[in-house]
Every structure is written in structure tokens, then in C-alpha cells.
Length: 139
Image (cartoon, rainbow, N blue to C red; front, side):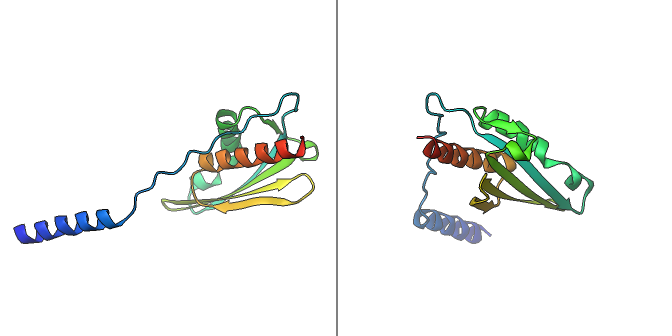
């Protein structure tokens, strides 16, 4: 038993020394240029799953997260007034959750689609993309 534990410990150390550890660079939240009005974002969500908790409207959760992570943008409930639409497809089966997010510009062009991660992390990525795109359009 002692030999087994020692071998397991040595193997773990060997693996840790081979696998490179790299810290993820924190993404910097862009700011709006002076005099530029904030972009309007419409939130849309669908939620599916095999448990009652999967039926919650995730648009409210996204709205809370946008307020916390990206207070500079304006959330709108009118899709005709939106500069961007952020769509969330939330899947919840058992203890497994998956989030797919799509970001669409006013002209209908898809700017991004991604999968995985929490709703809050997806909102932060969406905020960075929307603000970067909005600043580029308003130069």
C-alpha cells in the first residue's frame, strides 16, 4: 500500500511538471468614447431541460449580470430600438448546464457565437464585444 501511494504521488508530480500552467489574461472592459451614447441591447433567451428549474426565464438573469458587469450599456425591451441582440440558449439536464450565446448587430450580422461557461461570464464577453464594436462604429 505504501509503495502504491508513493508511486501515485510521484506520477502526480511528474504530470504537474510536464503540464504548462498559464494564467489567463484578464480581459479589459472597454469604455465609451467621450460624447458617444451607450448602445441599446435587447436580451432574448430560451431555456430547456428536464427539471423545473430549467424553465426559468434567463433574460432576467442576463439583465442582472449586464447591470453588474456592463453598466454602461442600455438594456431595452423593444427589439426595434436595439443596436444589438444577445440571444441565450440555456440547457439544463440533471446537474449539467450549458449556455450558448449569440450576439447580433442591428443590421442582422452575427458578431459572435459561443458555448459553455456561466451566464455571467458569457455576459462579460458579450459586453466587451458590443462595446468594442460600438466604439469602432462611432469613431
